[in-house]
Image 1: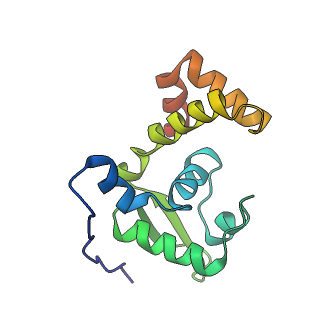
Image 2: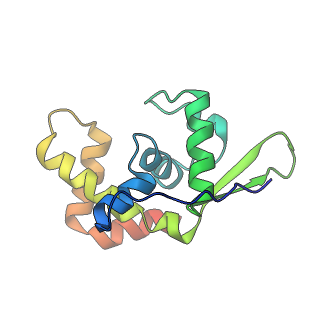
Length: 138
């Protein structure tokens, strides 16, 4: 079943506001992060993330991201009850945004972020493009 494309109601013609209307909720960018950084592909993978998204919210966000063309969904080859989610080019293009959020957090929330996040931020500071490409070309 293909996700239904509901028209998006934008609050304004500001590019930041418009982008946030699409994926500016609490969970969407974390799902993209999980797909690129942690290799999450199934509903179970996403539901096991440290942030603790509820099943209903997760289902809603996956459907929303699919309807926006950020991810695709297909049935698992050997288990027809399981769906596999994959980023589209449009979805992969969000990863540099996530990388910049990591850099911002490293600068202003350094006392709070994990050691792994600090290591990733240091890699980005040393070679932003190379680090991003390393994750996108897995």
